[in-house]
Image 1 (cartoon, rainbow, N blue to C red):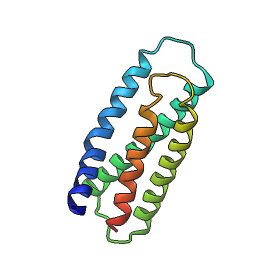
Image 2 (cartoon, rainbow, N blue to C red; image 1 turned 180 degrees about the vertical axis):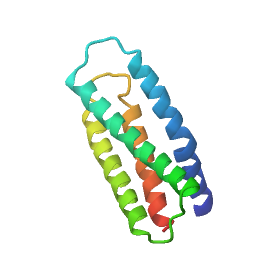
Image 3 (cartoon, helix red, strand yellow; image 1 turned 90 degrees about the vertical axis):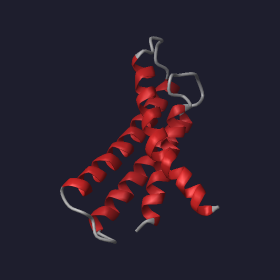
Image 4 (tube, rainbow, N blue to C red; image 1 turned 30 degrees about the vertical axis):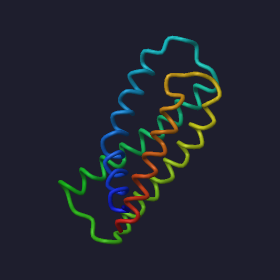
Length: 126
């Protein structure tokens, strides 16, 4: 049961979250209404979630093509800590931005939680 739950979370964070991030940026680019403080908070949260996902992708590519990280590598542990911090900040801004409608109003907290789940899984694999 636990293995299937962790498998589902891993698939959701590696497939669903990037698709939601791309969809959210497309929606934001097509948004024509004036920006409010709430939509700005949502955008900041969504941007931080995107930065966290980009850090995960770049770390994966680095480990794949440049050098592997040994277990408990200090650089990898710092990357995981930075990614987790970006995700936590993204959650805070995204929740603050749920007050008024915007194109990423609900995508921002979902993506931020997804990236945090990814980093928590990365922590447990160490």
